[in-house]
Image (cartoon, rainbow, N blue to C red; front, side):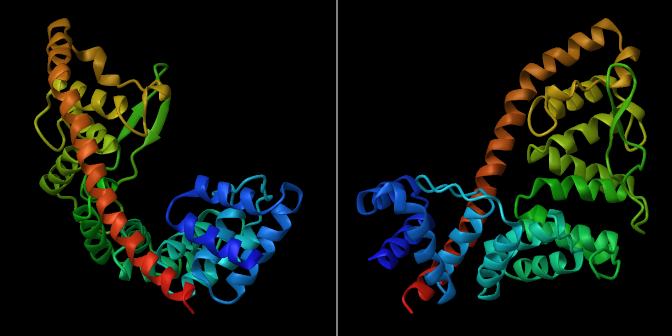
Length: 319
C-alpha cells in the first residue's frame, strides 16, 4: 500500500498538486509513521527508475518540496544523486537543476555543470542555452573559449524570451565601464561587459540593449540609461538617461531597495527632471507591460519543457 501512496504522491507532485498530495497522504497514513514510510516508498520507486519519484526525492533534499510533516534536512549529496538518476534518463529540468548544483553548490564542479547545461540546451531549455553561451564567452568548465559561438547561444536564448541574454549581448559589444552608484558615490555594481574577444560595435550594443529593454529587462534599461548619460553609444541625452535608468531600477531584480543613484542627475536642470518625470508617467506602464508579456512568452517556452518531462515521467511510471 505504501508504494502505491508514494506512486500517487509522485504523480500529484508532478501535476503541481502538492496540497492534494498532502491530503492524500494524511488520509491514508498516521502522522507519526508518515515521514519514514513515505520516504521509504518513494525511495523504492526511485531505485526502480521512476523519474517522478527521483525528482521528488531530490526536491525534498533541497527543501524545494514539502509534504505534510516531512521536513528533511538539506542534503546536497542525496539531491545530486537523485537529480543525476533523473537527468541520465533525459529529464531536462533535472539536468538544469543538476547543473546549478554543480555550478553553485558546495561540491562545485564547473566542468560537470557545463556538461549538463549542454545536454539541456540540446533539448531547447532556455536557461541552459543562456548559461552555455556565458560558458563559451568565458571559457569555463572545460569549454574552449569561443566568443562567436557564445554569442550564437545568447542570440538563441534571446529569441526564446530570455531577456538577460539580450542585455548580455549588448555588454559583449559595448563599453566596459558601466557602473551604478550609491548616493555616497560608492560604486554599487559593474555591469559585466566586453573583454571576450569581440570587436566593440556601438550600434550592435545599442540594438541589443534596446531589445532587452523592449522585453522589460531592468539591466538592459539601466545600460541604455548609462549609454545616454555618457553619449558613448549614442548621442548624450540626460532626459532619456534618467528615464531608462529609473525604469531599470523601479521594476525587477535591481529594485529600489538597492538605493541606486546615478551620478549624471546632478548635471540635470530642473526642467529636464520635470520632462523626465512626465515621460516616466507614460513609459513606466509600458515597461511593466513589456516585462509581463515577455514573462508570459517565457512561461510558454518553459511549459513546453515541462510537458516533455511529464511524458518521460509517465513512461517510467508505467514500467
